[in-house]
Length: 125
Image (cartoon, rainbow, N blue to C red):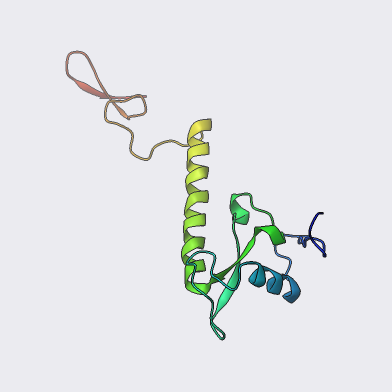
């Protein structure tokens, strides 16, 4: 713990409320600028604390993973984080062989129909 006069705050659970003193420290650490847009947050403007690495993507609920973000930019980043999590899950399932394509290729191994060498088509049992 070099250079810090107070210990780093870390939530006991992922949904633990962030204390006002921590919100203020994060705001001052970023000089009152939105982490995503780089714009100065003006008095009275709506802003939120964002996890730089989203919790759903393995981020920590700790002060060093927080950043001030304008509300609209935060909504857009959350959409991207959720989409990335869904993509990671799809890729992982496909890698493990748990995902089967909705529309298999016609004539492929997973198709209901099979084409014989003489050109006739039959259903697989």
